[in-house]
Length: 360
Image (cartoon, rainbow, N blue to C red; front, side, top):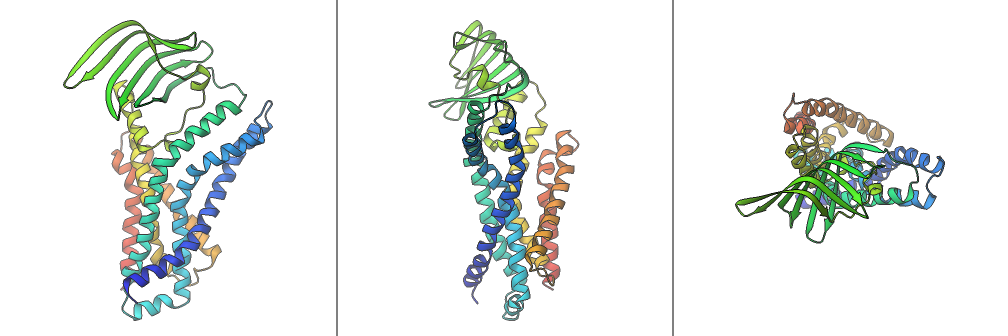
């Protein structure tokens, strides 16, 4: 069997099982989110069922991005287990195909899933989460918190993207305090506006007692102002919607948030770690695939129930390590890169060691 035929054969085995895994893990994650949506429907003045359906649709990309690596692990475990129980792995090795070459085929499929996960996280998830929040704003009648701290949001108008950081927001008084605005034109930072107070008056936001920094080439023009009317389109009610979790932002959004926090003198360690972890999670799909090859070779591990159980054990180990390293990175005891990538490093080391041992 040539290398190309081997790849096609193994990928065909993986594809059906991967679809099964995506369905299984997405359903499990969806059930968890359904509890939140059910509360929205049952509470006094709750949302309509049509709104709940829209929320589910817009939450789906976020759930899929988490399901893909887990589904890859399950698919690889089940596929290798089936091939092993059917003596096909033995036949391949007898014909001169090493276990390392088989692992390469499986890991290559994992790399493809990693790329799909990264593309989903960076391209689709941020848009879907923005739409999710918009539907939540219009469909949810309950009152949000009247005062919030450390609020971050974006406002895009044509080629200008503005990132707002608000130290304190008062919805009932329609006022923001400690406002920092980073304005990007075609991706380049060209203006920063800082204001002590911003008041919503006559349908517009007015900044008071602030400073504007305009970057023109190698020079910076600094202007003090007592009153500045800005083109922010969001109303106080729209700003009051609960803020997105860092895990729901793209890497680009997180890096902009980090820039704003650091400029404001705030501790951004949590978000720096999240950037690294958001890059590491997609890569885990390829590493899960690598680890599944030697683990799936064990006798009597081709059954679906056994495969699901093994997948959950591996996932539990991965997230236990993450639960230890991420807080260490956030409080400065571990470098952010190490905090985000250490679970993947452990996966890679264990996977390579087991493949090497099984190939002897």
